[in-house]
Image (cartoon, rainbow, N blue to C red; front, top):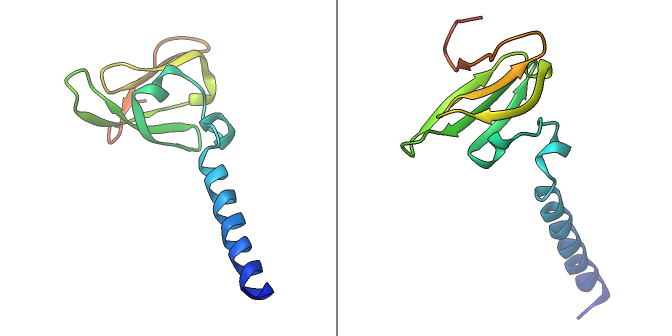
Length: 103
C-alpha cells in the first residue's frame, strides 16, 4: 500500500471518528435546556424563547408542542401528556401546543 493511500484511509477514519463524537454531544451542550422532558420528547429545538418538541402522550402517540418563554422556567421542564410544561418565574404553568395562539 502506498503512503498516499494509507494517509487517505487514515484521514477518512479520523473524520468518521470526529463525526461520531459530535453526535454524542449531550443535549445541554447543544443549547437545549435540561429537564425530564428529554426522556419522552424528540426532535427538540429552541427558536428564540420557544422550546419545540414532539412529545409522547400517555396513549403512546406523539404531539408537536411548544413552550413559550422557556428562558423563564424555574426548575424542571416536563412532558405532561404530550405537552411541554414548566413553572415560570413570576407565576403559572405556561403550556402552548404548536399552532395554538394563546399567550
